Image (tube, rainbow, N blue to C red; front, side, top):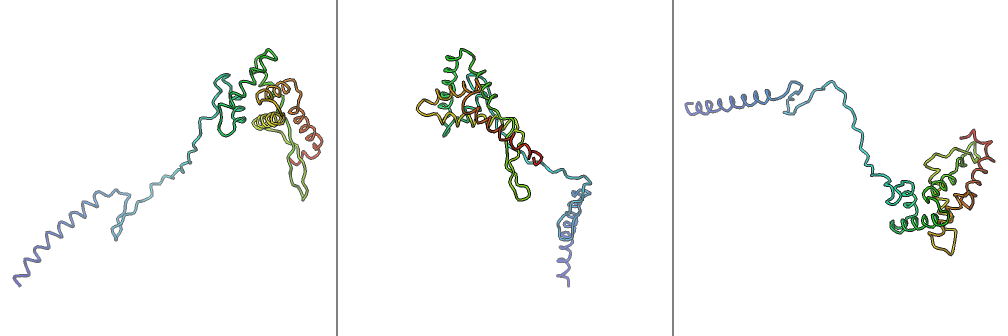
Length: 206
């Protein structure tokens, strides 16, 4: 019996130390945190609603004006002409065309270009819409951004349709035609307007 008493006395300091550590751990836990029986903790509600974080969209630097005329529209047109990433080639074609325009008309080629694009923009177009099992060509207003896109597209299609001459020369002549409201690009714009006018009876489907 005398040998078991020291063993019991030795356990008392260990229990006391464990109790002190448990009290110390409880003292470090904040008031809104609850300690569970298995040793885990539960964080209480703060009472404030969490605001969802909107995902960030990475946006590029956008269209940079061209180096010679400081025009965003010219820069966009160069990007449309560019093929296989050869931007220097596209810039040379556009700038050579502008020089030819300046030599022929004796005016600022940038103003000729802007007027040509403005004359080529369609105001309305037709879009196919299915109503009651039938397809109707419905005339709709064209948004400004699409107006410019269509003008660029039609001019480049007309340039590629001209055969047997350098691209810069063909582009210069097409821009001059659009500036004078003649040529295939203006004809295509008039055809689109004519088709929209012929289908204006279906405009209520828009």
